[in-house]
Image (tube, rainbow, N blue to C red; front, top):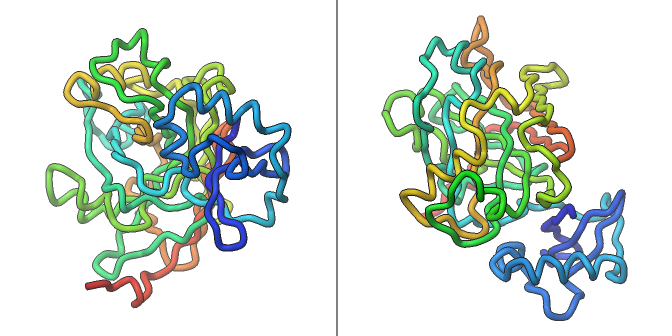
Length: 289
């Protein structure tokens, strides 16, 4: 299934994308009305959703607005320096354990939402990544069992404000600005992806290919990441794990190539679709206090 959160006629709903249509699962009795609620309800609810697709009302995909699959993920956990080619372009040694940082849950954005270029920095960068969506509450998951706790996969852009990222060891401030984690376009359930470590990933800026890789280049694979993270803390349904970016980011281009107002970043991953986000200078209306 391709599970989506979408807005139609002012109401945000859950559905399943089928070709150029979306089956409106919000009309199905017994199903939660949010993606987080659906994931928290577990395998029985997912099976119920799948069985309901054939009879659910259909809407034209082009007539709805796709939202972030999970509006407010419980956690967004990201792995740094996790592609061999990216470590090499950075001139950094291959990590011996996963490098973890958080992106705040308020950075989540939809697959076609705008990305804000902050007033405080010109060093805005893209990072095309494979995202893993956790499907059940778990702790101390062995790598061999890791797939059993995955709900599915999505595409993410780990948007980075490089000077804010680099000036402190934790990286979190440079990774957590509002709008800086667009993901989607939906959650492709794990049964549709035979091998998440054999997917082509491509990032384009204004149509120019910047990143072109295969997920087999991951230093720590998804199973190892889940084992490592769940050793320390509980993973919850709806958590998003952003698994790392390949080489080709703007930081390491010569000259450096920062994102600017009007740029369009498109990220494609084989079997998962594509997300596309336009960069705009952060508008005045974002100030809230």
